[in-house]
Image (cartoon, rainbow, N blue to C red; front, side, top):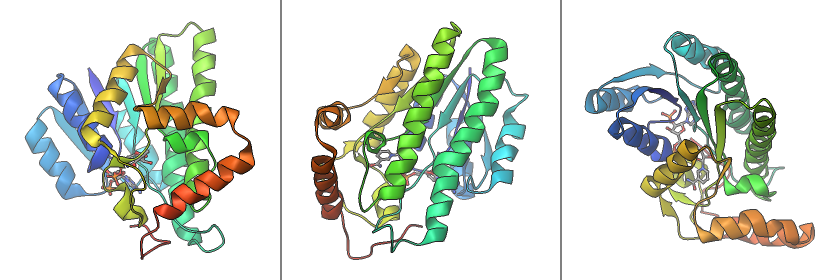
Length: 256
Ligand SMILES: NC(=O)c1ccc[n+]([C@@H]2O[C@H](COP(=O)([O-])OP(=O)(O)OC[C@H]3O[C@@H](n4cnc5c(N)ncnc54)[C@H](OP(=O)(O)O)[C@@H]3O)[C@@H](O)[C@H]2O)c1
């Protein structure tokens, strides 16, 4: 069995890759950090790597071209990042790059691999969204909106596949805070206790292998994901603002 995992140079994606390798999967790993990719290839074995900047469309297609004749069984769309700050102040180029990575690359890879998976009537898609996908997020508005896109797209495609009685499965992983480089890259602090990347990866894979659509780890994330349906949007806006505001560090409006 062979998986393509994006964003494997740190955090959740790195752990997902390590756990798949432990289970005997062959891997194709992507990210921009070539040193980390090379280290993982040497350490894990049975691994190919392709450095790619998923904010660039030609790199996204390049990843697919690299994989398309390699009989991929599982696509893990994990790469992503957030931009923090008031919408009016955040850097437009950073946000457009975020939209390219969090939305456009996910959309392209999912469509191209899904076409291949449908021909074979097998395959697993695991999209890493966020509990943010269930909400709107003042002070991180574009990031929350990007994860809403991934969540809703995944849910819609899941229904299309179900009606076709397809053996292709799609799982959307929606964690709350996870202890990775995500926050330092977005220039924020945790406002709630994070789960570990190890637990996040284990949970996401368990749900993906079970063919579940939604994977929401932990009680707090479940309360946010499912409880928001019953709260008025003005209340949600205020609560979300306070949660985001509590994350603020001294160096806001940045990513790297
Ligand atoms: N941590 C959290 O609290 C949390 C909560 C909910 C959802 N998530 C989601 O989980 C996913 C993984 O994030 P993480 O928490 O593991 O953060 P992380 O440690 O910062 O890892 C992000 C990964 O994405 C890759 N990436 C970022 N920009 C990229 C680009 N332009 N091209 C290719 N790869 C790129 C990075 O690789 P390179 O730098 O090598 O390119 C890295 O491997 C993201 O989609 C994030 O939105 C995280």
